[in-house]
Length: 350
Ligand code: AMP
Image 1 (cartoon, rainbow, N blue to C red):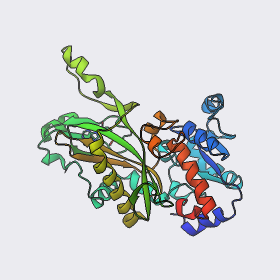
Image 2: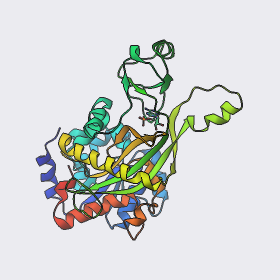
Image 3: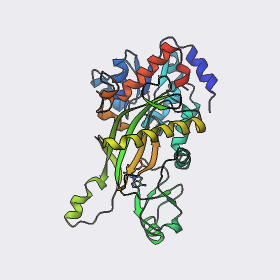
Image 4: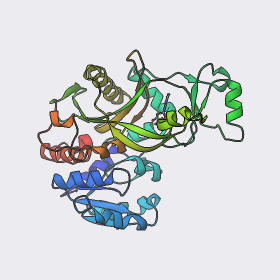
């Protein structure tokens, strides 16, 4: 991984930092938020997306750089640094750009965290360090209850299968590669995806580590076909559930569950301090609440998640923190501005 000092050297030479990201995932929200904070933006696009990113007047980037494929990003890093760009990581950036850790450009947040997000095993280590309740993990021969098989490299829930015994596992995975697959206990309950923002620069929200956590919004993913499966079932159609993410819906959680949700956020931040040197910026803890109101966590996303796209003007939670429309994208830009004013950019960029 490229040394922190190398990146901070680049940062020292920046006169007027700009916000850059690839045109996908939550880029419109990020550009829109930066515009509201008065920070210039650079969109990194591929040809077939250019028109879309030019067509939203208030969310189009100030500049567009076009590449053949998103995976060509390393080719334009020099140009981006010349333009004083800070790269904002999101789901597509992580998916398309393979060795992000080595890129010689300042990245918002802590790039070490992105490596932990990429490996399911490391993620579980982090979740356990944070003392979160996690689903039980099984070896195929041990399966003794309904489990979800998450295949290696599977993204956004696509291709997951449900199995309930070793024989069932063998039958349903016949002809498929199970290398790198993780078999998790299937947790029955209600899913929540709270969007946290950890700032080491201010103690003005929920106390965590040396700063505080802001709960900016909460969503729930809409997944095919599990979401509407009851319709088919009630019509007598037997369906194998699938979990591919196709959308998001806003959620307000029962208020008495908030203390537990905030504590989980705090523990994730403090575990990140110990394991990887901190997690400044946005993150999401993906959780399921069972019938005894116990939360099980199956994943952490250590950057802005697409569910925040529901809230470009803020949410039922951000209004209690900001007297102005505050999206996660805007909050990122605000943090960069605050850090520049305080001379602390190095604390939130690596
Ligand atoms: P993931 O790829 O881990 O984000 O999972 C995709 C979707 O599968 C989630 O959004 C949940 O709806 C579902 N899911 C993941 N893990 C579990 C689990 N252990 N039990 C029940 N459902 C799960």
